[in-house]
Image: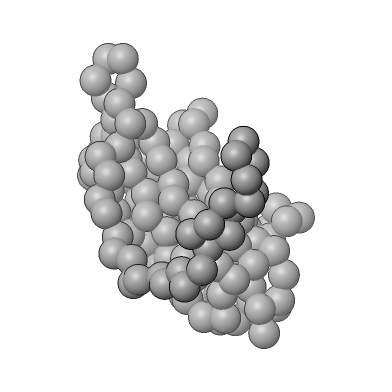
Length: 123
């Protein structure tokens, strides 16, 4: 690594090697009352040509849905995920390989709370 000069924000990295990363399980954020937050990870892979997966965190075993939508709001696939119970879960969508190329949304909703991720589908 070299720097262009003192006080400069420019840096050049020579011989930078990337190593394979592993998924680290990070505990979900907690509310002041101690209950975990509803959370949704970025879809993976993104962009996608096949199945798409997300990690989600549920604070309690209450009704919740995970929906794959287009940008016009049309649902292509919906899963009831509340019965998975509290904790972190991985959910895959199999509809992605059958979708036209475009931008899609994955929405996790539990009551009035919602989290949304975006995925690009390629052909």
